Image (cartoon, rainbow, N blue to C red):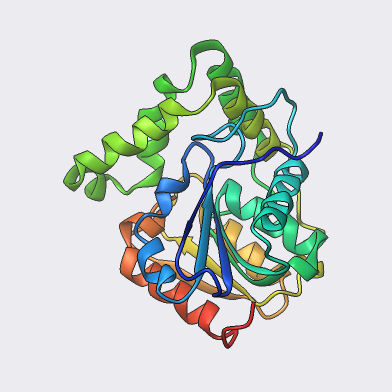
Length: 259
């Protein structure tokens, strides 16, 4: 499959090192809103919608994570970034992981949040069937129920509504194709090939991809470090924005400003 031109937003100084933010399955680039302002003070932040999500096209499937990597490489070329720091959560983390293994020259530093090198496939394949038969909207409450801890969700009904709208707004077929890409993903052999300095972030209460998934990534990538946030579910960047944003900045700033 050929790469598609994904929809993206740029923030921050045009001459600064580039940081790319890749969204989770079902979300849009808006999921990074808590991180963008602080990152944009010193980086050129490129946030985008994965194909099938938000404002990006949803080409006919099937998709593989390599197709999503091709889209990301094309985006880096479009914005003129020979190398970039790459931050991905869940599906975005799988895309970032595969990019770092396949195209190491394009990745400076890597952040993998609430993701897995080998998810359990059946739940994602089942969700693809559900999205095709009934659309994404009926799935939204259960999915958001995994994104935030119950206590945080109860205190932030506006955020819950916004996240459910993101999921409902995904292209049904595009979302299903992305679910299948996750279900078929296996990057366990890729981990040893990743040379980018890597920070892995885990939500201690993540029911979607629990902490053992992130621990396996840390054990597979030489020199990787692990941050576990609690309370935090599948989108810990929303629930613990100060801690996660601070960790991102500390990790990226260690590059010395060269991307």
